[in-house]
Image (cartoon, rainbow, N blue to C red; front, side, top):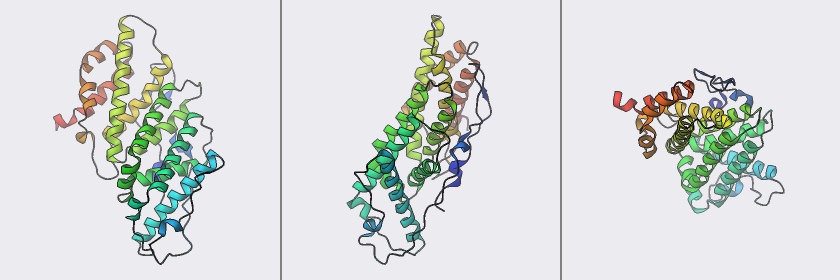
Length: 304
C-alpha cells in the first residue's frame, strides 16, 4: 500500500499541561484520526506513456460541492501516486516530465485538497472519516516522495505555506470548550508536513515567530499586571510541542535535526530569551520550560 502507516501513529512527548488547570496531555490522541483505506490498485496496465495523465481518473473542476471537489482531487492524486509506483515496478512506463508541461490539473488537485482540509479543520466533525484520514496521507505521500515532491513544491509552495499559516491560526484562535481533539488533529498534520525538509524549515520559522510574539506579549502583560488571554495561553502549548518535535526529529529525506536550522527567526527567538524566561518562570513555569527546551535544541549545534 502507498499509505505510510506512520502517519497514523500518535505523537507523544513527556510532559503535561498544568499551568492553566486544564489537562492538555502530550499523549496526543492522534490515533483518533482512524485507519485509512488502502489505495485502489489499477486493474489494467497501460502500454504507452504519451497520454498517461489522461488515463488517470478525470478531475471534475466544476464539482457540485466541496465534498465532491475534495473527493475528485484525492482520487486524482491517489492515481498519480499509483502510476509512479507501477512505473517504478516496471509494470507501467510513465514519463513524469509531462508534469512540467501540463501541471494545471496537479496544482488544482493539491489546491482543492488543501482547501478541503482547511474547511474541515475550521469546523471539524468527529469521529474523523476514513476518507479525510486518507486525504491527509495522500498529501504527506506527495510531499515526501523523492520524485514528486520537488514538482509539488515548485508548483504549490505558496499554497502549502498558506495552508500551514492557516492551520497555526486555527490552533491559536480556537476557543471551543471541547477543542482539544480538534487541536490534536491539526497539530498532527503540521508535524507530518515537517517530514519534508523545505516545509519543515519554513514551518519552524513560523512557529518560532508565533511563540516569540506570544512570549513577549505575555511578559508585557505580566509586568503591568494586565489580564492575558487564557485561551490563547492554553493554545500556545500545541505549537510548542510541534516545534519541539520538529527540532528533535529528522525529515523523511534525511536524518537531520535542529542542527540544520539556522533561520532568521532563530536569532530573533533567542534574543533576550533568558530574560523572558527569568521573568515568567514563577507564574508560568510550564511555558518557561518549553521556551528553555526550545532554546537548548536550537543551540545544540554549538554544544556538539
